[in-house]
Image 1 (spheres, rainbow, N blue to C red):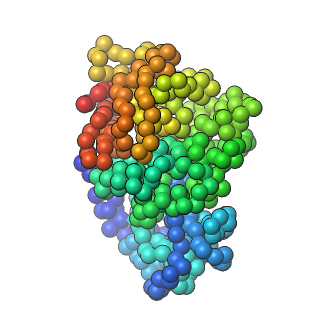
Image 2 (cartoon, one colour; image 1 turned 60 degrees about the vertical axis):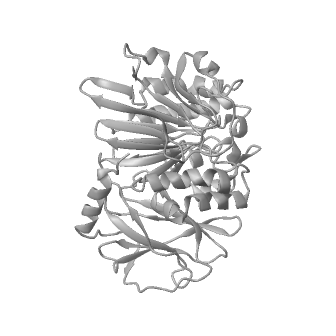
Image 3 (cartoon, rainbow, N blue to C red; image 1 turned 180 degrees about the horizontal axis):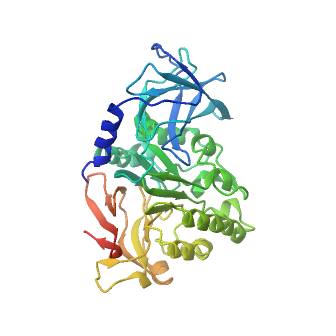
Length: 427
């Protein structure tokens, strides 16, 4: 997939001039030497409106005051210091800081640390435009197992193949053991500090982010969300949210009813349904992407997430969500409701449901749960690790599923124009 013209446009915009910041103290800064205790696990998370605000989280070995220093790339001496707050103590202390009052479509340089000696290198984040502009994003299914040797090569291949990607979507099971600090370290290493610190990361929790009924203590300190989801329901304020990015509304749901709400699953899922309806009905953008972990149509024989399907499928169809990105079944599939077929066998309408896996753990595949519930798997693959590259440009969305070697195993386009919406197979 060619580099998005959005990246060139963004660099041009950034070169035209700096932007005023409003969040904190403005000062002139001189470089500091980096200490061995510089913060680790820095990750960039979108707010509800990432065009004007961005959240950074990170971890330090010790307690103490921390700060985000940020400046327009074209005016590096105009540094704003945003005080951070501690969010958790797990293998160190996690911190979070949100820069507000940012200018849309503008490149900023930033670093985090104690404001003196223990600081990260300067990195760049770029705020999206407030309206629809072309951009690319990556989508990863379960990374989960054997991260360093088995999953990292796929992740790194994705980053190398799509250097202009502006955000990454993760559909759960990022690691295998919810509270394993070592596995979380492997996950951060697989992506690399530049990718975690310069791309916005949108993540849904999977069942492996739960230990029994408890959400991983690492989750919220690393993935704070946009704080605009349901205000009640176990784990929902922390894990359910939406963010708007250049003409796309990204929506994150929590499908872990067996873990978070085993005794009142229907009510817990229905709380999210009501919120989802509102998020979709108020969506001002052309495109919608929804991600959660457990597929509405299972790709593995004997599996069935009927409570998720019963709660959410009708809403996803009613509002004609464009992409529904899922994981959990450790194989690849992509399909749609049979009712959304057209006379052309290569064309469908309605939502596209994708199930993917990035890591090396694999399950058998079967389409019985698809066909038994009025759907079809147009593409279904076993034992295939993939990443997904998606490009959004005006009335066209292009999707490719690729292996680490660059082989395209599935592709389609969605076009929305005066003739309506069409999903066309292109492989």
